[in-house]
Length: 252
Image 1 (tube, rainbow, N blue to C red):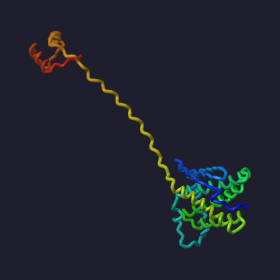
Image 2 (image 1 turned 90 degrees about the vertical axis):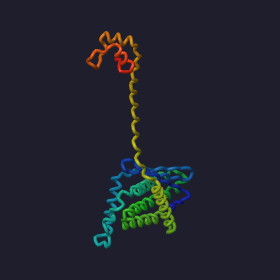
Image 3 (image 1 turned 90 degrees about the horizontal axis):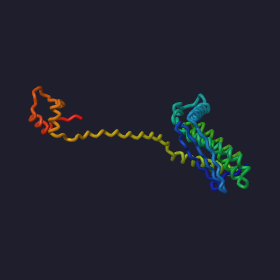
Image 4 (image 1 turned 45 degrees about the vertical axis):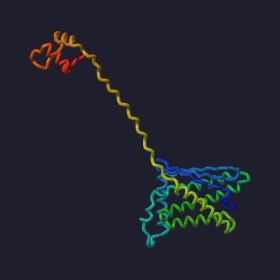
């Protein structure tokens, strides 16, 4: 029989990663004596969580029976979508229980500690499942899973004290994971970076025209290249006066 795990001999941490598709990844890190570290990870999809929720509702209705008094089905529908981390915790604890039991024969002198930790993880997995049911308001299912966890603790130990110690240690691991889950906010999707604005095309500089002499103006007028907006004849003096007042426009 495995002894109850000692909290001071094994330490565990659960990290949760919220994926963009709604899935939750739980990464469980277990530290054993001698610097030995074991990591286990699992992914719980949105569809899997919905399936667990449906199982909880079905199991609660089956346990209550047709003669349940004062029960509202709507109560079970509350909390939908809020148990993903609890489901992931239960799943990764169960995975760790199997993994530690398989790895124990290769761990030499710390094998008994690994086996004890395996027992604690198995019990903690059922307690996490009970927490999922409690979130849904499925009291009967939560009580049944808690009773099953207590039965496992008795089976894995030799004394009532040992069973109580194992159950307490497993519950402490489960509560520790829940506290971490409560502190991890769901990351908001990062906004896509905006494309850098294209630089505005430089405006062409205004053409610079060299001033024309009055002699050039008179020569252009005689050659027929200067037009007046009046139908009357323009004398040289009138043309020069217009030129000096800025009313003659040169076109290149």
